[in-house]
Length: 279
Image 1: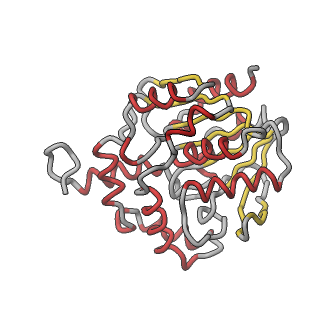
Image 2: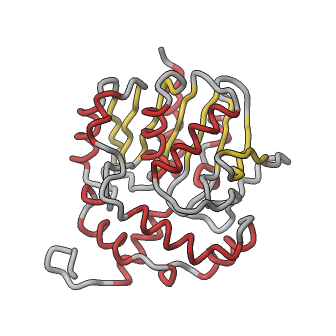
């Protein structure tokens, strides 16, 4: 099936797009100083997290197939202003696998994390899949989540650009560099789950709805919708649509920035800190 508006399917192009989309570095664990992570059990699965800094709580939610390492460029500065809880989603990084993946299931685990850690006045920074999860958590915990940065997320696969949707539909483990499987098996507490992890991730990405459109007008948290105007997967018009549907939102469009927003800390850090600290 052709998803590229009349152009022939080009697997090489989709592999390049995939690498940008996943934004994974080979070393998954952030190595800042000598800090070591912790585990907390949520819904019968152990979630891995790392803490940095002091202040009000800020939860970082990474992108698809990613881990805490998605935020390695922004943690040093953000940790000067907030107490960071950088979490590996269920099945990702060093967190334990669960029976299946969906955005709502992961959001339930993050909501459970907030409860287990007794956090209040929580801020969330979500990237890509993490943005989707963050908005769902805001819906689950309106009394706990005060602010959310919704970075490069979407409401569903049908809102992607044609090439982005094609990438999701054609995704397979064979498209990934072999180092990724090796790294997964080295750090995951369930190293033999790699093949199922890939299947579960693809099934999650192809669910018809990631965020129910009808919940957006009910979101009480203040939301900064942040997008790069060179995002190859999500059209800018969709970012504006999300911004308009949220009642307490701001829109930040970053010029000449692609999907991986937080690889540009000199640009994104001041914007994030300003939004998160202001009344």
